[in-house]
Image (spheres, rainbow, N blue to C red):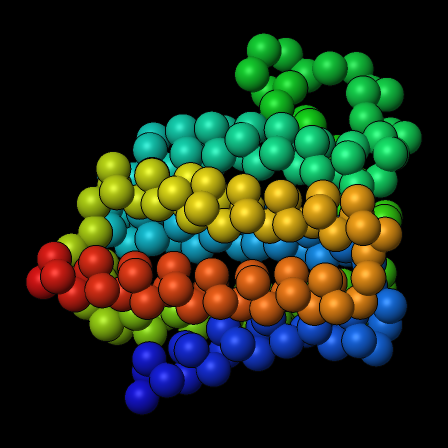
Length: 213
């Protein structure tokens, strides 16, 4: 039952951008930055997973992950917003933060730009992602026994694997849609592609934990 609800929530979360395209005239930029923001959701729940596995001992790896993953998402988001929105103004106007903290500053700048550029209903779609991944965290990781088979090293690597598989396809598809002047049918294909890949990655992750058991 938990798996069925999880799958239904995953599908429902992906129906928000579908409604955005059909009813609210979302363009490819709105879709891609929404899919980018899902990285932040994954990172948030990944930190909770680390803490639930190691408790206080997870403080250092969680901090390392926050800075490293945050820097990765910041550079990734800067690339996406620059290409999708013609280098929106606002990046680099403040005094740079010292050393590696400049990447966290970049991430915060990207988040600020996304909130400024995204459609109003975009926040509803983001909330749907939070709920879907939150239910998966509780039902699969905490209650389903995946926590007992998880390792800190495995958790450190997991979000990157998802990004490389999912976002390479999404970004390539997004640029293809832009090159063809964003026809409605291709926007819908992009949404369906994201849903299909989400389901595949979700089932693959559940299978990996089941085999580890």
